[in-house]
Amino acid sequence: MPEETAQRLSPQGVPYKDLPHIVNEDGQYLFCKSWEPKGQPRALVFVAHGAGEHCGRYSNLAEMLTEHSMLVFTHDHVGHGQSEGERMVISDFHIFVRDVLQHIDIMKKSHPGLPVYILGHSMGGAISILAACDKPNDFAGVILIAPMVIMNPESATPFKVFLAKLLNHLLPSLTLGQIDSKWVSRDQKEVEDYEADELNYRGGLRISFGMQLMSATTKIEKALPDISWPYLLLHGTGDKLCDIKGSQLFFEKSQSVDKTLKVYEGAYHALHKEVQEVANAVFKEISSWIIQRLPQGEEVQS
Ligand SMILES: O=C(c1ccc2nc(C3CCCCC3)oc2c1)N1CC(N2CCN(c3ncccn3)CC2)C1
Image 1: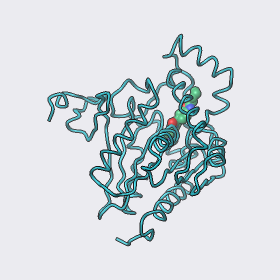
Image 2 (image 1 turned 180 degrees about the horizontal axis):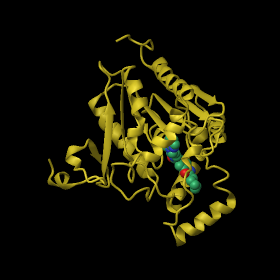
Image 3 (image 1 turned 90 degrees about the horizontal axis):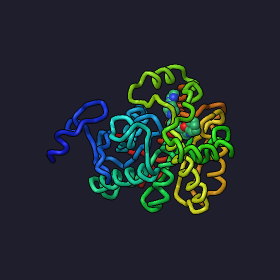
């Protein structure tokens, strides 16, 4: 083991030699997780988590997918969870995309020939979209749970955008509002679990980070007419963080032949962490969508 790794500690003080990890192009250690199916995997699924959270929050979804012979893998983005990097600070949004593509390449080398899917929530949805735009032929499909496609018109009014751009030069570390997690899910236990999870980011969103989010949404909007890969898009009408209008625009402007938009009436932002009825429907929608697209589409009963 390189001597460097032997000394490197996670933000929580755990030696990376004791944690699954990859090292990104900037030499930053990223904490990884994976969930393997019992038998031979039929597909690889990368999960891209959202801003301020961490990859461990996708264990339930990942375990469900392994029951359908999928190998699920993920990492904490730079500045999140158990990965290195100043908390919720990113110099360029493309670093998130680059690291995801690096991790996927590593896994493809260990599992050649398997179809690769990417699943992203919120900012993780934006990362997934830009990763698929970078490598349009590498993905068998993209699954997007309330992706950040446009900035919420209330939090990004033209005046606020102007002010953010100005302040980004003067005070980039100034923080914008915090996300009130009670508006992210109607399931009170999920809200309490989120609030109690020490690996989630608790501070306000820095202006510089908000600017990177805006830059990502600008890139996505420009790319919409060139998108032709298969995707499943899921959004709640009660989403107060990522406006459903972004998903409706995505569905309308993208050129994909194989595209599905499922709308969940009244549901808030984190559909996979919503009330049980919604979360169960979302899990089933995702697994069915992938299974139908696997070679020999029928599920092989294990
Ligand atoms: O990726 C994001 C996300 C996306 C867009 C955002 N826009 C802002 C605004 C904030 C105010 C200033 C202008 C920019 O913050 C964003 C965060 N994520 C992942 C989502 N989180 C929310 C909290 N979560 C949660 N909360 C309760 C129950 C379950 N999960 C996990 C997912 C938010």
